[in-house]
Image 1 (cartoon, one colour):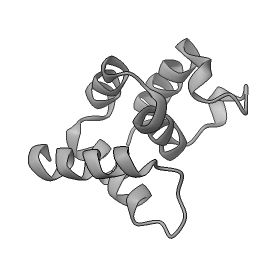
Image 2: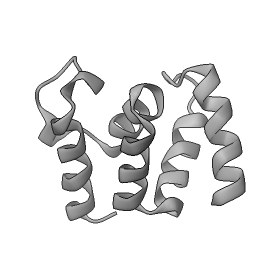
Image 3: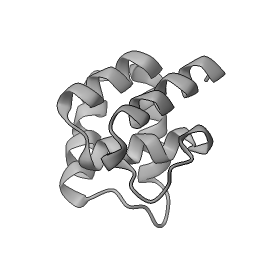
Length: 90
């Protein structure tokens, strides 16, 4: 993933800071934290914007990485939904 894509994703969080309320250091957020926040708490439009920034394949890879972690903060309902979503569209 390019640095420009990461900065665009960080700006997406900067536009809605309630998605990640535990930090104000948006420039240091990894893509996994950004994606996890949008998967759990974002709107459908924010998800589509992130998909536009990263691309479906990159976003699917990020989701799989999060999903395969022994501990993650994905809510079960959204974890299930995005498993099906990316299985179908990625």
